[in-house]
Image 1 (cartoon, rainbow, N blue to C red):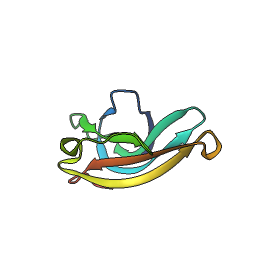
Image 2: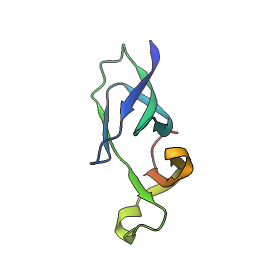
Image 3: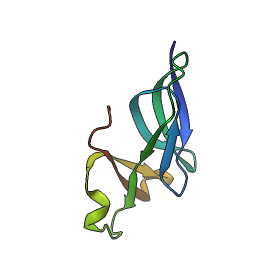
Image 4: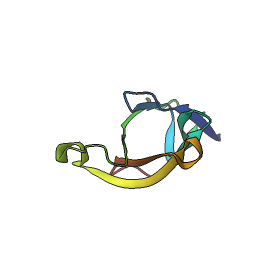
Length: 94
């Protein structure tokens, strides 16, 4: 069965998503950054490890951090006081 699950994005910016099918969104929820993904709860597939890059406006981004990545979105936190930009792996289904 396909289900939408929410995953908290921690400081390592690594997600482990069992039964991954598609990344739907990454956004703020309260003080947290979360990812929502479509997963197959019946598949028994091994978890998919996904590394993402999140950087704030004005923060350094080293060129090697974005190798193999594609821009996904910009998100706002704290009523728009904090702006973050998100990249995901190029081959990730979004």
